[in-house]
Image 1 (tube, rainbow, N blue to C red):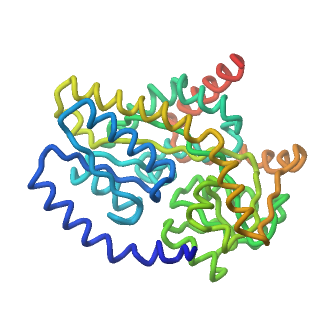
Image 2 (cartoon, rainbow, N blue to C red):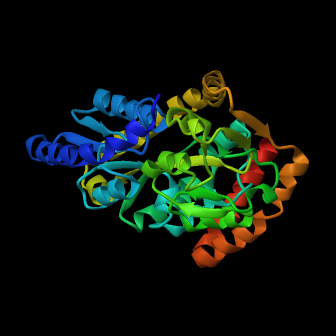
Length: 343
């Protein structure tokens, strides 16, 4: 597979798709447009099609799904949602964090555990997720429909990573997110913000020496071909969120608003089943396809060396978000304690 081909298509598709979408807008008012950040068959795509299925079975509306690159990069699709061109956008807080600084909380390393059952229960039960976040999003013109986990974050690099010292002199690609940059700085790397479409080429040309993503994305994007050493650092989960343009949502009849929220719940339950075992499957595919790939799973002692650097990122988060972020972080930690106590 030549993964560069995916990225080369980007520029050509965007203008065409945008024109087609605008034309569709005037022709069919019952078509709702929904864009996400991933490829066909990836987690956000599966979630989108589950959402679409529910909406179409329970209303007169149809949902048109746009995948990564069809309407541009993450910043483009958020702009199109805020301006009302799109009704729905699925975007990681990694990008939404520039609009809503508090959303960067997911990038405080070692805040979320990497045990899947605990993570799923946290997303179901958390007051921070289910009550505080919707208010923050609505303050920025967005209706938060569903937040959900995609998978444990895995670091890939040009050599195995076992300690913060291994990050020295390495440029690690991060999403355009100040707190994620602070995390990799704390880990000892040089954080390098890049849009997703440039990551493969930057790794291939050694402009950067590593990146982080869930394993299924490393597999589907072919990143292991140009960054073959995988390290499970256990520092966090990739989280994403489905949002709607708030004006659009508030303009709907109450029963349609409820139907949209139910569609989000339906897609959440389906995606939780889908991601169970997905990481192992993706890793198997990588190892079958890549003879030079290595997998490093950090020991408890090695994890402690990284974890010791997390408090400085937490401080940075509070510095960036003030009282609002402090309250959210306190609630986040309370919710996690409650979930872990229930285990």
